[in-house]
Image (cartoon, rainbow, N blue to C red; front, side):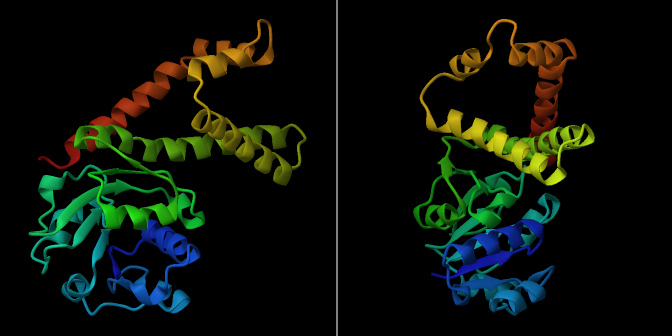
Length: 252
């Protein structure tokens, strides 16, 4: 099975790192000859297609990782065929806007943590061979509708916000005397630990948080300050703004 990639930028570079790290033979990957393609081809000995027509002619699964505004033009008028799958990573671009003829079209939203095979990736609709590719990058979460997928895509922004919270926490601790390397590792692994506990247990999230919030304790104190400063409302407003942008970027 040949995996073709159109749009070889930062996200595609992360995906390539994850695929090769998961044992995919570089000879089974094909890159569109633009962006970082030549450098990544030299790094991992991945073949380059002559152009996008050549790539679609040769690939079984095509990963589309261009800017959302370029997605329609990038997919249109290519030699798509039955049994082929186009997987779009283009945020806010609906399936109806991707012209892939007889090929199946699936939307997915991996994160740059795909580079270390740790990306939770949502997708719709689930397509067997493409799922197998995405699973090499981390856990895959199939969704039931395109509307649900749009809501879930906001998580790609949350991913960046979480990294910024880790940075802020580490910088705060370092400024107060902590070792910068140790504080970075501690803050990062604390977020990992919190996420794993929620992801890997069946307890309601309210119960897990309630078990931490002892009366008069430091967790309660911090949450009270965050609530007083408007954190919950600000966070939800940011999510709403991103969803609005995604839903209105490309009309159906």
